[in-house]
Length: 149
Image 1: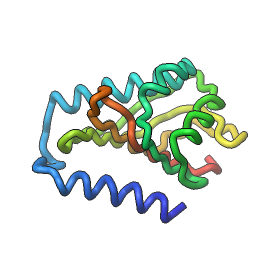
Image 2: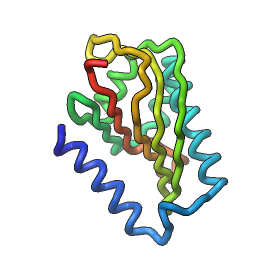
Image 3: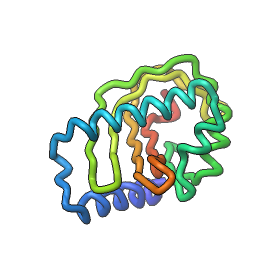
Image 4: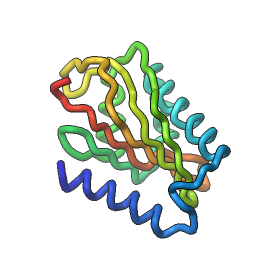
């Protein structure tokens, strides 16, 4: 798992550092777009709207969870089984780096992962959207909530 997490974070770092944008720049339009994309994704997950999720996830999507890394197929299977009632997004930070919007945040959500029901304790996440010819697509997601909580 450490290797997968390091790979995703390294890729995001390289994407950020290879563009002409400063990660620290305040960009209200990017912040608004990032929040809108994030809310769209979480609402689709909450509603178990697999058609929307299928369109949102990029073909080369990757994720990292507390139990290891996954690809698009793994994430679609995981989302099908989440069955969440509600969620709360807080501490949202958005940066735009060229065609990528990187969002870090905390989410409070009661979810079932790998058959284990987790508490609503807020946990950090990172979600990366990239602007493609097909529109904005989610290309990477990190769930940093420990399985024991």
